[in-house]
Length: 421
Ligand code: ADP
Ligand code: MG
Image 1 (cartoon, rainbow, N blue to C red):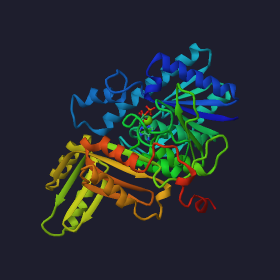
Image 2 (cartoon, rainbow, N blue to C red):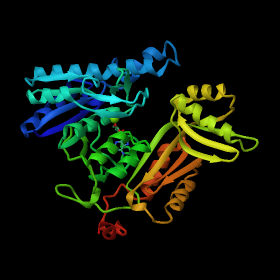
Image 3 (spheres, rainbow, N blue to C red):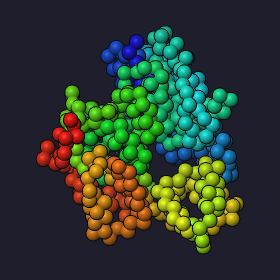
Image 4 (tube, protein in one colour):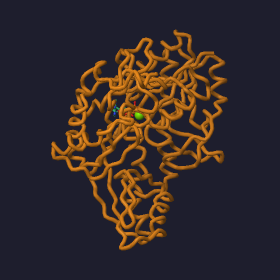
């Protein structure tokens, strides 16, 4: 049996009109000879009745530091409601469908509330459903521990659900339907001239996602890479091929416009970041360990970590600040906090081993008077912490500097043929 997984994000299931468009995609897949497995997110965005943020505030408004376990239980409901609504919509269209929770779909998680990892997946009930010719509709973003504790997978976790099910079921591909036309050179909501990139490698997308491009969840890309599963990101309602993600990225072509490498492929950003600075009078390895251990115990993930003998700097999501400050205070550790920061990152396979990219980035931002608070890099990315007020200006500056708005031309492809051989 040929299986395709179709994931519909929050805005793609938010209205009657969008759900009908999703039904059309399901029908197309069936007409193409595939058995679809549908994965859905919670309906709509903050403020709408069944959106994840609305459900979260339902309990956080009662007690802001409510245990993450309770948050997970309420947050998992949004996707369950969505799955049942989507199954009903399919039935109305004459397509037999069954909705499932993450637990029923066989996703076993590690118990880390709020950002659980899936440790195994055996979708027995889904296989049975597909064998009987019905569409399986799965609540994304969730799973359960072997002991039955409900866990959510972190923001954007429905993407991960889709890819994990795709791998477990041996799907031909996983299609991520969303509210933009594919993965662009920057967030098209912040930068109008951002351009859809037809093909990308898993590594590039993974890096973009890790650096905050929320168009896809990084864990989803990692799982797809491990199983060599084709991933497609495209618009629910617009025509167009979107972005195909696989091992080859721009190097292989059938049906997709080949595009040569540039030094930078895309720009990602993460907003609402707080920088935490902790100063010691003298080096103290025990206290140093305490910092990172107490934050880990509180379930707070940290980023842009710079450790010097008497200074420790890192960033967290601003929404985690009350928890982080409480955890540090409990250990008697004082910290200084810079709120209102954002991280902007340039990413590209083409920057591997190419000298001078950092110099170009720093000069471009300096020329615009943008303060760089901290930096970090990997072999295919450079990240910079900046004041959030300068975020759009920084993205635009870097986008212009690396000429990302123009369709890449063969002339702009340094060492491309060498990399391809
Ligand atoms: P969904 O609810 O479908 O999962 P998300 O909001 O999680 O949708 O992801 C889609 C959003 O990702 C877009 O609306 C866009 O603002 C944002 N985004 C961020 N970076 C990019 C990028 N590089 N390309 C496309 N979209 C991006
Ligand atoms: Mg998403």
